[in-house]
Length: 401
Image (cartoon, rainbow, N blue to C red):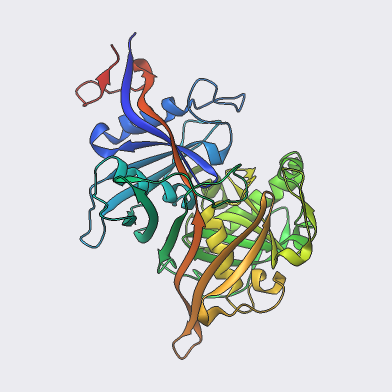
């Protein structure tokens, strides 16, 4: 049977890779589109390597993005993110990928979806997963997004042109409220684990933050070491699933694990500690304000996901949260408080402006910001066996020559 080919680009955004599609090149049928994405990434793969596709065997390397004309008048483009499971035929559409958000503005300019006049591109991106707006600013050369520069980010070798991302009004991206339970601190009753203090925060994506010591960790463990500890990963998944129920994302822990494997993501917070990065460099505790690890799709991130960075920054500015308690010193939330996160790949700075509102002392996140780099790695056509995309007859996807 012949293969099908679909025009796409393979891009790095921050510390993630994704296959990026223009909406007009995809079939309208949703089931066919999902089957196409799963086949293109090489899932499901019981070996966890996705060798028969474009995925990289990790959650940060198994992603798709769809970019097209805006569906709201205050945006320049629509952007939809899909987290493709490595070991099963599943795509989670419930949240955004902040790292890949850094590639969307440059992709839109380079594809001619919008025109960049002058030396700086400014693209207002509507993330359809969360309904939120992201403003991207980046240098432009000869009408195309620049890629060379002196900006370095932890987890990516070398340097590149900066992409400044500002997530506008990021609270309630997945649940409709910055604090879905109304509480800064909750106690989760987790089957097989017990009572676990946690902060449930929905900023850019939905997160459950726990103190490292409460789950038997220091917070500075290497990702591979945590991945190898099956009992720890099971405990964290149970906590995550309980949080999904408390946040109204899932009706039961079982549904949370089966239908919403990446929402919420789980963040592990600890005071700043000396640690060794994946590149072998040593970070002194004084270089950061907080030690941070994050788990998504049962995989510990080698570099924090960008929305995770923003979630940590917002939570650090909320007095009394798990993250604020772990952070070294109070955050100046009202004036765009900055926080330095000690991650497995290095120190990541971020900022968030969070204010108290109303007579009940609630919280509102005005915006959160961070700097990334991006690069188009190649473009052309992605190929998938036609037999892996059922119901494709009659939809506009070109067969390979």
